[in-house]
Length: 286
Image 1 (spheres, rainbow, N blue to C red):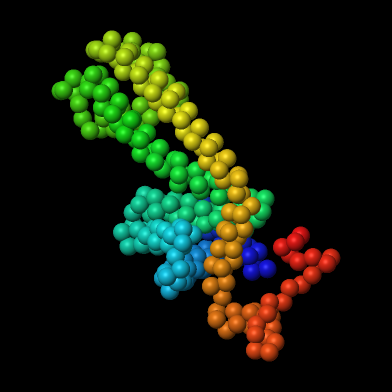
Image 2: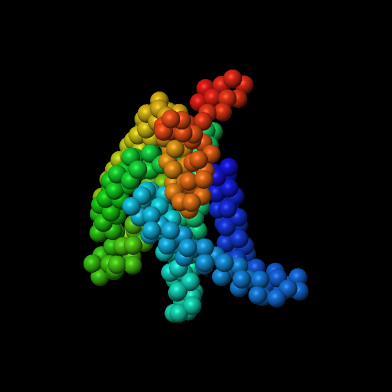
């Protein structure tokens, strides 16, 4: 019950936050003949929840986890968005912080899906792949793109035409070549100089990048998927227990003690856990 209540609370918060910031809530309420106070009240409510969540994470910092980090990132980016719009009146900066806040909020919501048996192992697999495969691979891939972008840029552009902005465009172009499966044939034809050297560089870039590195990433992900699948049930149970423990820590101590007394009994000075049988079996046996 506590788990499902938490899911409903977060989903309701996300829907409200989306209605306020993504849709034109202020315009909608005016069209309905309502006061714009509705929009301001919703924004105030969201801000209050964010501050309360940040205070909760601070008071429970000793029990910090990956989920806590995502929660803190959401709170800080949302507060930065509000501050940027209110005090410095910079709309782009405010929306940039708000974008990261939305990402963090939905990632936090996805984390709760680890509690479901049907989706928990999938969330764990995505997490394991990002941490174990994508992160180190991204570093190597970034260095690879920078290396070839620099070489191609030096060959294509004379010294008098080089600039930081043009080099940035070349980095984006190389990344597009990599994700698109290779370069276009007219790149060499339209090259102002060094066409032979460009052919060698682009061919090497395509073979090493689009063929070797990306296929290596796919193989690494497949290996991680196989490893996680072997212990999928155990990992799901562990993550579900962590979620429950995290939710229980958010309950006030007085209420937590009352809940504990409803599942524990004392006989001759010793505590025993009460287990309810359903069809003659415990929850673990079902």
